[in-house]
Length: 399
Image (cartoon, rainbow, N blue to C red; front, side):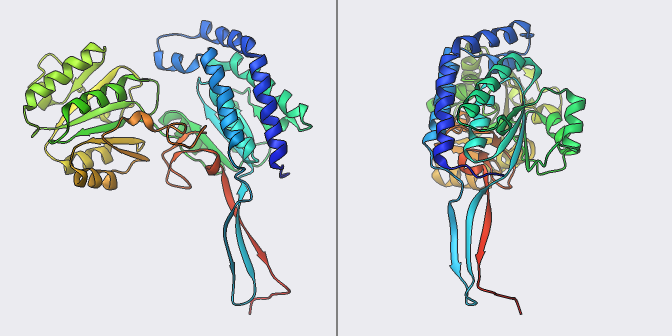
């Protein structure tokens, strides 16, 4: 694969910003076609599909942020001269060709492509059929930006294939794939893992937990829970489960107060058998599988725990390994929670909604990885490279 210099890559991104701004009305109109054809029963998916003026501004801003970042390719990681005289240098290098599979969000067509391109990777974009018109016009914008700067369209390719064709593509890609990132639910992830022949980096489900310790500041707790649950229900960083320590002072009154606050913002509440004894009108959790479920809706589980250890155990058993938060005024408890909960992001006295590239200082993101190799958390520009060793000798042989 040809290594492009930083100046040329940035020229492409400059062109892309101008083209999107020029085409914003057409982009929004094409998106309206997708919205009109969409079944609004899935509100979370519908929210992800919408492209308006603010979304177009966000696309331009995402490109600008990536353009302004240092080129991640060729960065020196280590350098050593061995006793043998060999000079060993380790530098960052592109993956090669990346594929991303995603639903609904047309802005991923911008963010994934800009990150892959700046990191000198080719990318195949497999968007959902519900965003067909939106994605097609965004691909045209990319191709214009590439060709205006003397580059092939092949750097960024939108795939127009169905499920069966996707399966065949994964098994027998037309060229070598080096990394696949499925952004979606368990079924999509399993589908990709089953059929792909290269590395798969999972952008997993949310199913995020929050633990309320017995010494939590209740005012902070209510504010954080409401934000984490309602700020954006379609976000993979939205809150799904709340575990409440039963030793909180005025426990029953606080549980009732939490119910009142959540009902005021139209959140449906499921409870375990213990909380059911306090909130008699609430619906009890129907089955254990509910504990594994990512809701992506105005729905939340409230459950009782006896201790920090029990909370940690439950989170590590049921959560998606995405984000988890503890509300406590005890820094020792917070540290134990944050060290022992096995999630990509752990929080002390803060909403899970901050698990996002832009909020965490990464900038635009390809996905939120819940894998441990090669990176966990927001996949930004610096995470879309691998590494390569450069070894310099002078007729060296190993004896």
